[in-house]
Amino acid sequence: MLDSSPTGLLVMVADARLRDPIVAGLTFVGHEVATATTGEEGLAALRARWHDLVVVDAVLPDLDGLTVPERLRDDGLATATILLAGSSAQERMAGLAAGADDCLSTPFSLDELLLRVEAVLRRRGHRTSRVDRRIAYADLVLDVDGHQVWRAGRPIELSATEFSLLRFLVLNAERVLTRTQILDHVWDGATGRSNIVDSGIRNLRRKIEAASPPIIRTVRGVGYALRAPTPAGVRR
Image (cartoon, helix red, strand yellow):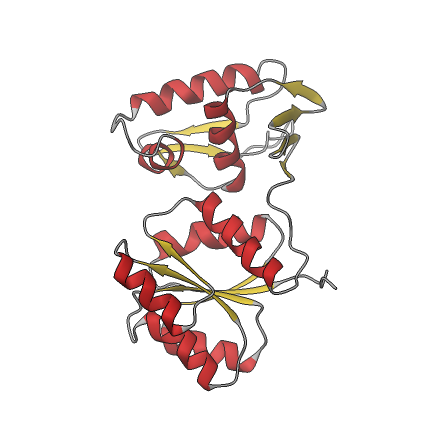
């Protein structure tokens, strides 16, 4: 039988640039997320309170993240583990050999991590938040399975790239995303040109803001952010 209770996750990552998007994405799809910035802090949190899964960076300031699955096993803890390893096959194999449930090579997309978290939790018997169904922000609703989008109940047709761009913005709602972050996620950084991001944002705005208030904000000199329209008379 699948456990339908909220899943408690721990993100054991020191680098805020890596940690914050992971926490935002996991929280957005319905998980309860705690954080730790050192290995010992994370292990103490895992001993003090049950967590269903821990996401561990292989690079921690006080210990090798590859040892975390083994340390958990020594403590008698059956917490599921996803290791954020380097790009080498040897490091991934070492993580799996140490007992990690899955290893993800860096750099990676947030979408891939969310799906792998769900896969591991499902194998452990949890009914997860189903990142592959519908996600919403303000009056936007995205059906990832059906590749459909609605705004204020109005269906909107998007290309595959536009859909990926909007999904990335929704998963990171209220956060300012740099052009480089968007380029790396949506276009795999292949072009190396930030102007393709600006063009993609323009096309997306044209479709989702045609009959509704602006929702994609430009942060000059930085990038873009998805922010709910401000009610009339309220300054933001």
